[in-house]
Length: 465
Image (cartoon, rainbow, N blue to C red; front, side, top):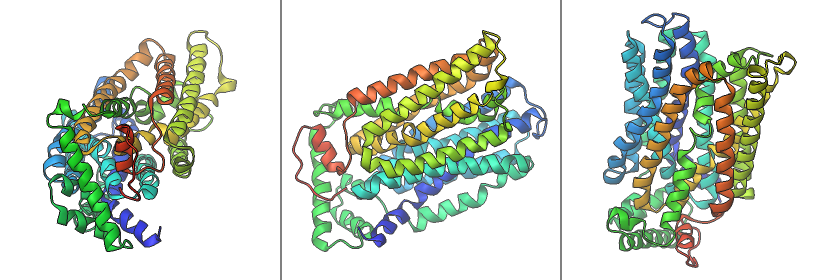
C-alpha cells in the first residue's frame, strides 16, 4: 500500500487521535490534581478524602453520560458530528476547572472531561475502523490508543510543575487543534452514508479515503459496503432482531465482556491512583511521581510493540498473553502487600517489587488489555449493533470504574492494600480464559468478511473495509 494512501487515512482519523490524546490528559489530571487538593493548593482549600474520591471517580459517570449523549448523534447525524461532541465537553472542562471555587464545580468539570472518554471508547475507534483498510486498521487503532497514555504522560510531567490555574488551562490549545482537525481533515464514514442509503456519498467518501484506488475498485468497495448494510437491514428490524442473525449474539457477548471489563481488571484504578499506590506499598526506590511517569512510559512502549505484533500474533493470542502478564503481576503485588500488612514482614529489601509489578501490569495493559478490545469492537459488530452495544459497554465500565475508584481508598485503609490487587488478579485470569475459549481470530479480515465469518458464510470479498 502506498504511503500517500496511508497518510490520507491517518489524516481522516486525526480528530479521533487528538481527542484520545486530550482524554489522556483528563485521566492524567487526577494524580497531580489530588496532590494539590491534599496540599491545600486548590481554590477551595484542602479537600477531605471523601471529596477527593468523589472528584476522581465521578470522571467515570461522565464517561457513561458521554457515551449515551453521543449515541443519538452517531446514528442520526453521523460519525464526524459524534466526535465533535468531544471538544465541546472538553472546552467546558477547561473552563470549569479554571474558574471552580468549590468541590461541586470541580465535580462538574470532571463529568465533562469524562464525557470525552465515553465518546472515545464508544465510537471513536468504530469510526477509525470504518474509514481504514484492513492492513491499516489494526495498527492505526493501536496508534490512536497510544495517544491516551501519551496525554497522561504530559499531565504527569506538567501537573506537579505548575500551579492550579496553569494545570487547568494548558489543555486549551490542544482542544483548539481538535476543533480544526474535525472541521477540516475528517471525512464522514462511508458506512454512515450507506446506512442512510446515499450511494453517491459512499463513493465520494471512498474516493477521498482511497486516493490510489481505481474507479472500478472504489465502485466494488462501495457495492460491498452497500450490500452489507442491506443485509443488516434484512436481518434486523427491532433491537431484538438485531441480535438474531447467526453469530450476532456471540459477537455482542464478546464485545461486552472484553470492552466493559477494563475497570474490573484494575486498569482505571491503577491509572487514577498510580502515585498513591506507590506510597501505600512503600515502593519508594524512586519517588512516587517518577514511578508514575515510568509506568506511563512503559505503557507507551507496550502499545508500540503491540502495533508490531497485532498483525503477526493475532488478536486472540495477543490478548491471552497480555492477560497472563497482568494476572501474574497483580498476584505478586497482592502477595507482597499481604506479607507486609498481614504477616508484618519487613519488606524494605523488596521495595522494588511494587514498581516491577506495576510496570509489568501496564505492559500487559498496553500490549493487549486496553488495546485489543477496541479493535474487536470495530471488527465484530455490524453497523446497527455498534450503536447499541458500544454505549452499553461504556455504561458497564463507567459504573464499575466509579465503584472501584470510589471504594479503593476506603477499602485499602480498612481491609488492606492486598485486597483490591488479589481481586484484579482473579479478574485478569478470567478474562484470559474467556478470550482463549470464546474469541474468534479476525486477523487479516475485512469488516465485511468478519460479518460473513460470524454468519458462517464463505467470503468472496477482497480488499474492502
